[in-house]
Image 1 (cartoon, one colour):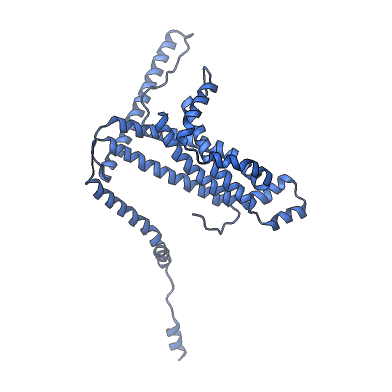
Image 2 (image 1 turned 45 degrees about the vertical axis):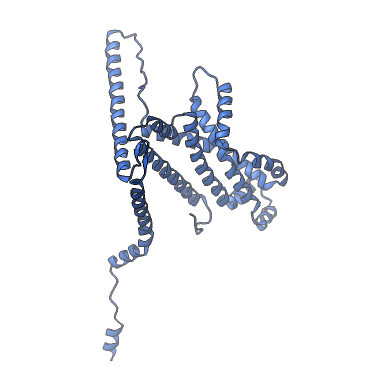
Length: 331
């Protein structure tokens, strides 16, 4: 009877593979659903593109866009090879000149080839990060001040409501004129186009961070404020141990919104002002008017969207790293 009970109660040991497969099955919906959505989008895009004829030809489908993406990569590689060859020839000429005349001071001339698609991406990324950092350095302290002081909030709130809705297209001419008037130098550290774009981005992505920071600070639990008073924390300790940890979720919500707005603003500013970057690439391709231009513009559009998504994920990762509440669900 005991042997029969042992047989009936026997359960086979779980293999490592069964645990692994269980994890795969549990994560399958999270992996398959985005893939299904992407495939549906590509199918709809391909079907709709075949029925749209423009002045530049048929609207490009996924295959044409993929082909032009490869062409842009090839062009970038060829441009880099030309640049390397250009500098190599300069070094050889300078070495030969120095060998003939030891007092000669060699000069290295910059390669003047047109920027490639990837050069434009780097220019836009660098510009938006500088503009975003300038806005954040201003918005977070001012937001904390507004959250802590009702008087400061009452004084600053009208300015926030006045300038928050202003379009970047309205700021750009003013910023361009101010930079041209004040940023005068024979040997500038940064180009005027870069300064103009960065300041325009700063002016437009300032407000979400400022507002969310003020809301986050003002919503801190009163019990935490009372604990700080009981412990007689110094103002700096109160800021670093009570204010910032409690308001981090709202601050990062504002930062993520600001970064997304800044990225959109930058592309529009580059298109309007013809400043170097992805916006200028899109406008140049539109003006080019070739049969390949639409596909190249779609490559740029998809790249802009992908970069915006990656920037948001980076900010989300930073928020998870610095947030005190590791169990909170962040999206």
